[in-house]
Length: 339
Image (cartoon, rainbow, N blue to C red; front, side, top):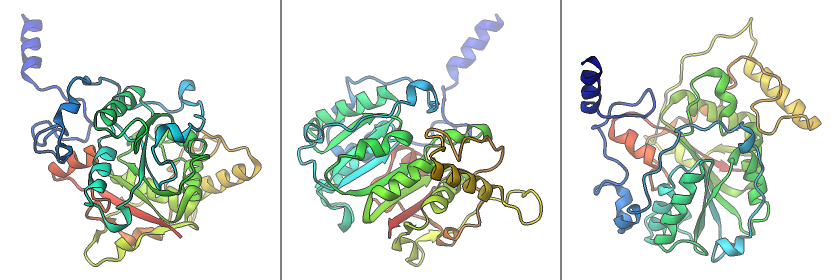
């Protein structure tokens, strides 16, 4: 009788597999709802027949099968015009963001510098999502041999190798709502490892943009600190942060330091730089081979005064961003520009 009552209660409760800090369902609309901005693509039937993909929300990028560096593809077989400026979304999830970006670019609904034409590349570690996204792009007429492509890869270690032979400039990169990695020991799984930071800064064209956003403050701060620490000489907050009223300020509580004036984050960064110079830095790991149990994002940030953008500057939301906005929670956005 107890088992029957328990089963009945479970059936009455909506199932929810979101992040632990997420509100319960019913407060927001799904991405494929008729009033969702993704429905402006005008072909709701593309979502039908492709199945609802069930998979783990978080993937360990340090597993052996995810540590294989992807070789560069034949871009002429992927894109109709492979020399166009490239827009890359790292950790693209289901891929709807790039579909909406491409659609709004074609409709001249983006800001002038993103009006294009451009090619769009989504990098995602979960193969099932990549297969479904490519199927959607094909049904929309954007692939294959069009302007959108999704690749199943570990972007942290394969970004440089994939783009090594791309003939056009890298116009824009985005890292949106990365896995939060609440446990300190899992922070080495963050997508924005130092090697990726260096690769993005080196590959971006002069004046190119990098868009970072998260609804988790400590993740947004960690991203900002990673790029400021390892690419601060090449990147800086974009002019959009200087517009009056465009930003807000919010920082986490200061972390405890070890001893007067010491900064564990700086020690970690110096360690990685030394290993990088000697060729000893671990490609798929965090700030170096040595496992230092501290906060890798401790930094006296000069970029913190730039604040967080109130509005998405790209003109198209990601799915997670749309969901968070509907629940009334803040999103922490940072737009960087190659100097």
